[in-house]
Amino acid sequence: MKTKTLLLLALVMLTQIALPAGNAGAEKSKKTKGPKNIILMIGDGMGAAQLYAGITALRDNTNIYRCPVSGFVKTLSADEYITDSAAGATAYSTGYKTNNGYLGVTPDGAPKKTILEMAETKGLSTGLVVTAAITHATPAAFYAHLNVRDNYEEIARHILNSGVDVFIGGGWNHFTKRSDGKNFADSLVKRNYVLARNIGDIEKATSTKLAGFLSDEQLPRYSEGRGDMLPVSTAKAIELLSENDKGFFLMVEGSQIDWGGHANDLNYIVEEVVDFDKAIGKALDFAMKDGETLVIITADHETGGMAITGGDMKQGKVEARFTYGDHSAVMVPLFAFGPGAEKFSGLQDNTDIFWKCVELQKLGDK
Ligand code: MG
Ligand code: ZN
Image 1 (tube, protein in one colour):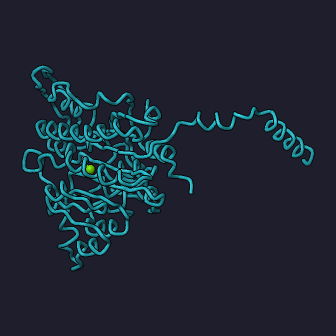
Image 2 (image 1 turned 45 degrees about the vertical axis):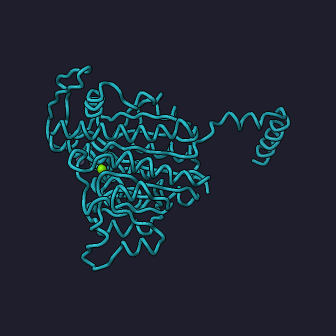
């Protein structure tokens, strides 16, 4: 035993002596420089068919072409072959599979630190921009820890202590018209947030603590009054978060692609994907200029079992049929741009996205 240890020691010393002087530096530079900022963009319910319907409506003029890397993501949850958005987003936010309906906790209910919380701990700025209520499953998985996805009032309590710097979506009533009589809007102001209640307020905002509530509950669909809220809010969030020299983590969700899928409504899906593509454009514009930002575009699952049954790329026309009104198990597409993008190529599990991001942005080390 002793001889073995000694031999090993001698070997280690010899190796160190044998190393040429410049080697340590070379080793260091061989390691890819991680991104300073990460923008994770989730098209809820955006399978390849939904995306392609949007691309067709855009007459092939999509921002996704700017991403050099693509891959596929398996979406199954801990307890179901077909995931819901809570378990899907928890895989992205924590790196752990959980049961459908659970947020930021494992199947046994143990809370797991999310990538957003890890970024906060490291002094980075953080943000969430969505077209649903900010308390809805996908954004909630990044700051809440509970096993009931539709307990919006409780989820609202979780965001108060999350430290998230900029959040924009709907859900005002979950903060202000509560069954416990509390007013969390006041609590947010006490925590130095500036409140924004319309898109004009968002555009003018300069505070790096910003809580944007653009509707009382869920936001309307694009063509029914929401307009360019998503791309405008994405650009604003990037502008505010990028003031932090240490970097930022931002999650942007095209929330309602999923709702179009549940409704088997092709027009709804198309307008939501086109809108999401505009937000992708804002993220990529920044990333291309900045050079230190990784942008990942993917989905949590497919919705509707959608098939494209006809169309015309030149005219931007598309036809589709749906298998049913719920999520399907099919793999979802992923696209990536920026430092570390190549790590996201190929077939991967949804939990892998978290671990790759944490490694790249060096969020794991204390
Ligand atoms: Mg969602
Ligand atoms: Zn859904």
